[in-house]
Length: 153
Ligand SMILES: [Zn+2]
Ligand SMILES: [Zn+2]
Image (cartoon, rainbow, N blue to C red; front, side, top):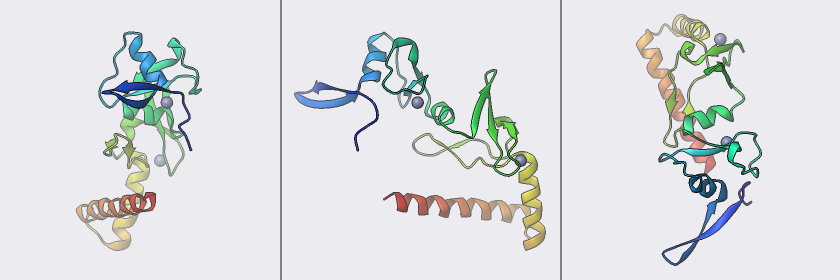
């Protein structure tokens, strides 16, 4: 399966290289792309490479833009709580945004209220201290991510 955007062939040290056309165009207009940043198509159409449709964004911003669980209202990011399904400002989340190696957000799912309920239920059920529980949760997500990485091959 090929990429779902246009590419252009350029020569680097005599070797042919295929690079995303929208990145080449963006740079040709005099804009810069900070290291690791992504050039995003605002209207969602990856073949619309017109000047006002392209913008350079950080990998975190980009992941949020394309995620159904994120929404930006008046410049502020909201995330949908996985438990109560309410839209809560990012700052209201128990887990601070954590980036993986690719800069993609991970491990934010519950709002502060739902997280507290969750913690309390587990603490009483398993008679755990708060510290032990936090460690257990960290371990759980570690194994989950490791399994995902393995499945991805
Ligand atoms: Zn995009
Ligand atoms: Zn919630």
